[in-house]
Length: 249
Image (cartoon, rainbow, N blue to C red; front, side, top):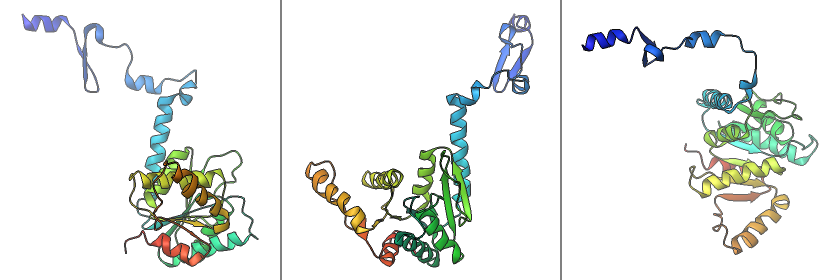
């Protein structure tokens, strides 16, 4: 009787690990659907497809940087001119980091980023640029010898945090502030290992630090900042020394 019932259901259709019989057998095939022409391209802008693009960016980023070795991120304004003393300071920092055998990671753009990449590349160091797709960006600067452009800010920031053991933050705007506070938040909440953060330029950062240690701390919204975690300096060599202190030799 059981055999007769099985025969009544007809042939067996396999779709991956799923078994289908009788009225459950589809009229199309997975391969046929894949190869069929699409009249609409709306699917390119749907969330499931975006998830795949995000996944691909993570895979590409991890693959490109997995064997980078010890690294320090250098953040700062894209608007800093090549005649600005801060440009010279960032170039010096990039050179010193590279001479210490440490990769320099920047956002890959002009200004402070270009200066740090230039300093590292000129002495044969690893000069990394992690760019971002923006309407006004000019692409990866010419001093990058390992570069990648990202669609998504959060994927890019993950790469900075995952592959850097220290950060030197030069004066900058919203993007620089975003990167600084993102890193400090992750350290404060113990989401990442202890990471030394250097704020370069006491005059520029002094007001922010006074506000944090006065108004914000006074309101009970943060814990006291560890003086060994956040260092404000005008000395390029001290900035490098502090940033390197997070790297195990």
